[in-house]
Length: 326
Ligand code: NDP
Image 1 (cartoon, rainbow, N blue to C red):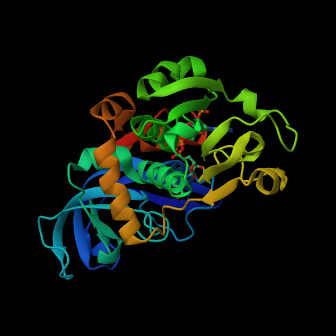
Image 2 (tube, rainbow, N blue to C red):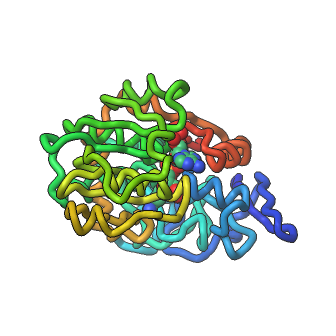
């Protein structure tokens, strides 16, 4: 028997309950994993509270991330005892996920534990951290270099944002952290490497198609007017790596930044990201992130606390990353 958070549906309401399950309840897959840690992402918050249509088939074990040890494998790439990490691929959405002491998954979805990683560090990074690294790599691939000027990170106190601030600063970029919580999280963001703090309200007002240019690069987790304003302020040849919709899925922009300043809009997805790119990103994050990131920007919770934290992450009240210890 093992402990799991299970979601069921009662009418339109999603109910979350910690229960005991048997291995036979697990879905099909080549690899059985003893999950040591999972994490809470914004998408998990939407799934657990039922505030977003993330899950269609109930009952479901949520958790889009996990790290653990292989117990059994019918795939040659993995043996019992191997340490593995999983993020994305619809796990915790369509296939039972990481908020349980055991998971059975496809071997194709796993990544061997990257060098220098352990279960807890891997989950303090999780989908949010991987996405932050993919955003940074997208800016690098678009030619954005530290000497080109300031890089803006929106939703900076969140999981993706806080890792992006730390990674960019470690790589030598001058980071401007946009946050709705300057007072509450300013010290943490400065400690993570932000050179300047910018209240979110400065980007929330409606803007002209082009504003005074300021950003060599943008990592956006928020969408909506915040992203539209940032794009209007992008430098000639600048680039924006966009991954999120914490503010809005709308993008009320014009073609002007793109056709007059050659700005590039770079979409970033971590869920279906191909294995090779994923592994490269995982290895780089662990090389780049300093120990101080793990000390400063992570909270550890139990399975029983997930519902409360899911509610908070959806309301934008969580800071940094939330690790779930199993
Ligand atoms: P978090 O909730 O940890 O962070 C989001 C941050 O956005 C908050 O901390 C807050 O930062 C800011 N924010 C919250 N509400 C609003 C609002 N109404 N308007 C403007 N800003 C707001 O989430 P994650 O970091 O886990 O994810 C961020 C986004 O990225 C989500 O939309 C998520 O779905 C998406 N995502 C996408 C992935 C992909 O593969 N494309 C993968 C992972 C995440 P502050 O208080 O500092 O302003």
